[in-house]
Image (cartoon, rainbow, N blue to C red):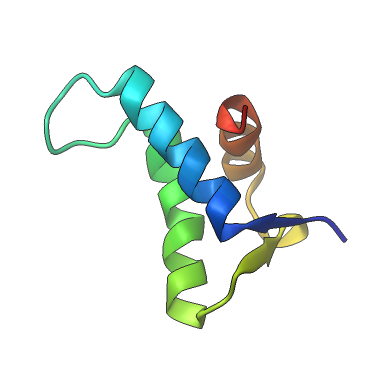
Length: 67
């Protein structure tokens, strides 16, 4: 089972915000999707998250911004 690390997710969220943020204090749509997973990782205090436990839209957003 493939997993996404919290560091990979942080970098992808940062890239998205840097490139897409148009309104102050509001996350871009893709960053918001990834932030849902990020929040769960913080809540459960884990360093990685199974891709199988993510919604398709969350995985797609991550894949768009991971590089």
